[in-house]
Length: 288
Image 1 (cartoon, rainbow, N blue to C red):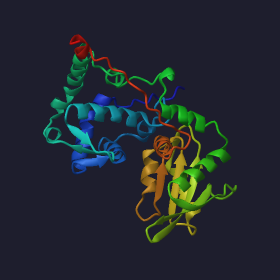
Image 2: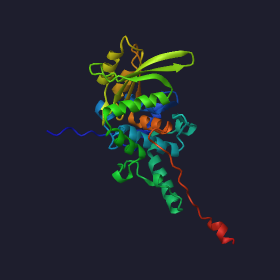
Image 3: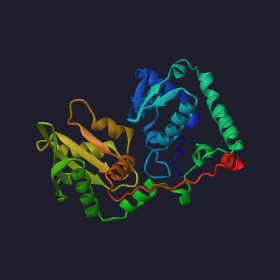
Image 4: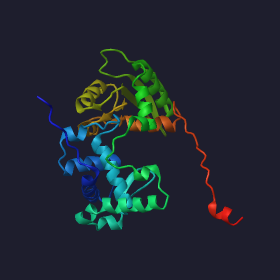
């Protein structure tokens, strides 16, 4: 018997819920907060929320929401800060559901005018519901594919190096079997305070669920009040809620997408090249 098909809301179906979620959060929220709020107010099932996009580094729901935010931003309904916080604009505050339904056609009309004038960029014309072709894989896809091919011990050493570069000291990789999934330990100093942090590395192609977070927390009890889980995959909404559950030691989560950003920021296995763009000044040449 075939498994039931998982139907994930498209980007245009997520635009109105995104505005409702921002209003419910007081007008602003981070990417994770916005996604979690949409899952809550729209009663999104765990199967839909955890369904992985074809790039294997994010959920399809999160991917479609990213496009919904892009369209809403271009319509002037929301804006984002350099710290990744999205907020409603005055225009977005007063938009109706009917106004939002008109956003995709308005943006496509803008794209058409831009292309007609010869000023289009490739990312402007890419359809928001298009799958990422293999030949157009992003650097994150390439990086995560490489990370999934290295030995588990090498991934643990990479996590050790990452934590050291991020300011941890006394970082040790334990990786002992029967240790509750704990792969290492480090000390993070913040001003005058020091925190002992246990970490776990999961070289996954898929999602990490709430049971894995609960098991890791169980192994932490009596050893540390801080935990960190690093994966090349992603975390389910239930896993994120479990990680921050009231009354339990908090566990920080680093998914594949965030891991790529950290490696890029710390220049660990990722280099940034500046590409020269030559522009012909036809107006100047016409005056010669």
